[in-house]
Image (cartoon, rainbow, N blue to C red; front, side, top):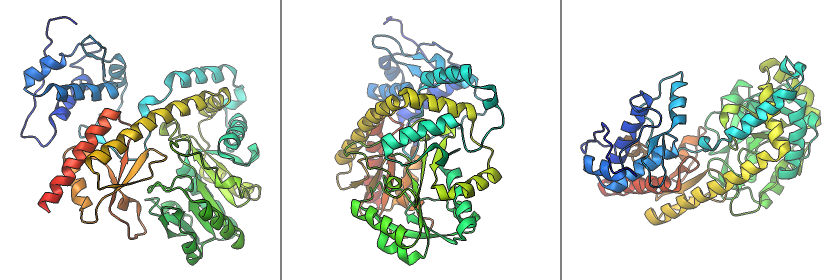
Length: 467
């Protein structure tokens, strides 16, 4: 590294509630966004900047590491940190201004690591399929979905999730939000159903059911999943479940509960909508097969690429029993114009070539390391907390002592730039839940997770003292 020091216009305020590291990050990030720092520009060494600002060197190192994780700077051993060319290109192409109050540590759940989207692999797939797509495929075609993707999903879902289906039963959607709206309308029109049972805590927006003329009825969830004994009391004939990994508690439906649910479906001539949103990410136990594979005529299976690839693709699918195909097709034709066709071909290419399997395996390894960092940090910083749902998914549910005021803890955390959700955020139908917070770990490095948990623990302890 050159012995000449670099200078940069940065100021920090010790009277600000924001941590010093976050102030440094924001100054550099904003300088890149507004063009004051251009592509390839060298930043001061961590030693020089710490001396200039009068802060500890680890604070500066942490800020640089966070900026590198976000793609704003490039770090190389023995060289100055430099502004990333990709970050500048991304900023130049942006159409809308970037909010300046983004959380320093955004631990809200349900979002994957978007920086790990396989851009090169996806571009290669797009070039490949565009070179051989028939002209007719670029027009107004079957809303059912591209045949090549429905065939690829038939093989993939059967192999990985144990789903029983043929291509004619698969409908391509823009995601589960659209799928559940279509299904509720189709089932209400076909059977006249007026009630739908949902897990509680669970979906925080139930408008999809009410818009279809259905009344959502909450069924409590415990460590074994939905309490099937409480299901009969709802008088519903349609139930929506997440058996492989319940959101938000993280519970996996036990074998006995799965058997009870299937028995209930048969005894009441009922139907289940299975939301299989993140089953690919399991770390400590063997994968749990889809419920649909055990009762394909009574379970509608729904999946999405939002957690494995990116929500921006707007790609999802549902596997519909044969006797419901016409009803679902009619509603889909009336409410949607289909999902992007070229993207369907590209995703099919990833499935058939094995690239999607390779990507999932790579991300499973990354997320497992981040999950471990989260669990270790919580055990060290908040040993009194009870952790749930750590065997799978992209977040952990953290139960704290009943005496903790989680609303005040979250308010203080937000003031310091730390964002997370509460279990109570996912209970629109009410319910008596223990105090718990949801911490997503997909979008942060292990070092960032450790810092975030340490900050959270400081806030929790400070609130306890004042209480």
